[in-house]
Image (tube, rainbow, N blue to C red):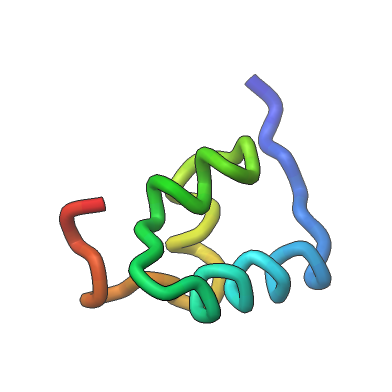
Length: 54
């Protein structure tokens, strides 16, 4: 499977969306965007130590 390359703009927007959505989980945001949770975790440490169960 080929690895997808996301633009810096996309990465910034995913982090902004996660941080601005009260009660959001990494799984829920990733599902809404159609991406894997690991993509969010890789974006500037999104979710580290915040929602380990997601």
